[in-house]
Image (cartoon, rainbow, N blue to C red; front, side):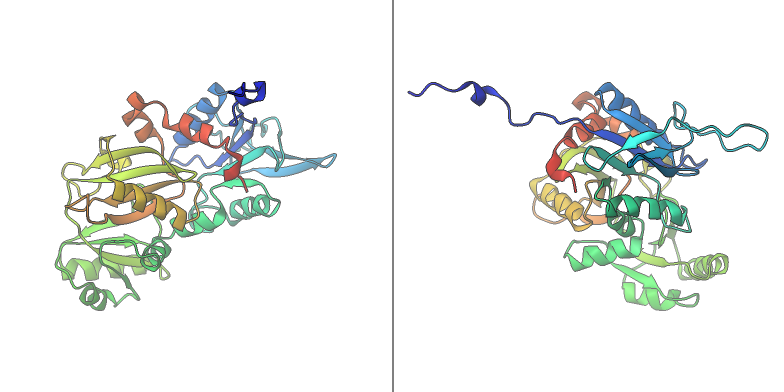
Length: 346
């Protein structure tokens, strides 16, 4: 028998260091706690990391080297807003390079609606310069738009609740007829997260009034209607690089119809069927995401029937699942370790 050589004992998965920039936005309705959590876990793993605020952020260049400049982000994710009575302070410029730096963009939302267009443009410039961006703008475009989410689901053959679009302020009756279901139904605005913009509608009169009100507030609003799939819980699957790193069951909030952790749901660990695993991974690939959260309502026969997909989230909150699955290890650390895999890089 041939004796093994020394090099045979060297593992093939040697970790090549990388640097991480997390760009996000600290909003009163959505404090940047997930960004702060990622920063702390990255530091623990020895990853050089910057948690930066999109507001005021810019890129500078010196001696052909690029730097990101942002306001300091305190522990917990808070950012001190610019004050004319105080000196405006920036963090130390953070050096970036496409060969060793991952740009993690959180909070881009919809340009001009829930975020500045310039933030989106900054990330697009990084992509065009061959940086690895988590997630790419294309993924954000799909996931921040519930209508585009639905188009992708239908085009790729995923099972979803019956869905139709309200076309104008007087289009609620026609849309409900096309839906071919009974009340109550779910109304969703085209953009929104954390369960905001999702309404349970009990009657045709209520539907008509809500649609007219929404169009009065925003004449260009997008609205979709969906059949209500009655369930006791839905499922959030966190996927990184075509691998499932965490799964939680989110019970429906008492007295509500939503299951968002931000709305008070108390999540618990959950085990997927093989069919649910296969479908969740396919949904992540369909939106071209590197790190995403896939949400679905399970079928009654989970082993044989496909789940009802609700949406894919390109910037999933990780606080709830990190706490729910703490007995299984840190979900955030699993993601950060997975990102050492250069095959995931652009």
